[in-house]
Image (spheres, rainbow, N blue to C red):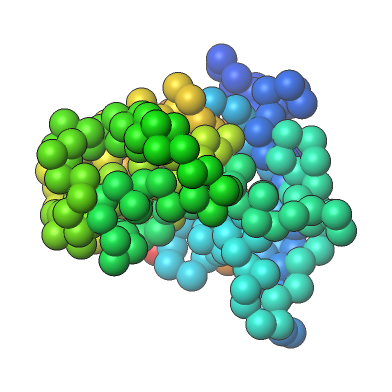
Length: 272
């Protein structure tokens, strides 16, 4: 079986194979995941660095999104799901018995493929998570709303529409609104599961530029089918195939001089 730590050469400037605990946001160790009797993830081990963008690429159904959903325990919602191994957020096991899953998901925000604004105003969408935390001070909520919308690159477009329905926004704006909703609660990690797959090219470019800004404050993990997108936005890339990590290295290495033939075959279109 492929060992993710044994097959990664020294990287510059950051070596994800020998990443220190201080520089690690998420550590996955010997992760195996089953849906009832079917095993879909096999011995996943990797360290995801702080303050960087890490992309998962691979064919449809290879396990990319399953890894992503394991990181904030979304797979708990799937009946018959069984997880073995460990995932640590800043050194703490997220599958520990004492873990508050709701609190964990506030620390690890997630944005899905299709924009999913709530049928509420723009303002109420952004502050939704803050209200759940019991925050009622209007000045605090106003400040957080503006800060999150600025962080999502959306403030100038919606500052005069805060009390209009969020579903009236264009698709690309809705996706940035969802990102604003996720970052309003100030997570440590932001998971983006194919965030541009339903968007037009201009909106896609806007989101990609936003991702580059977001990594200055958050650790970002993105799942994408678009290899050009992975090459543009990520610092590190993991190629997933049939539930296994085939190769994980800095993005330049993965795309220009992959160590594994299977990675090269995927990137060049020989497998898909």
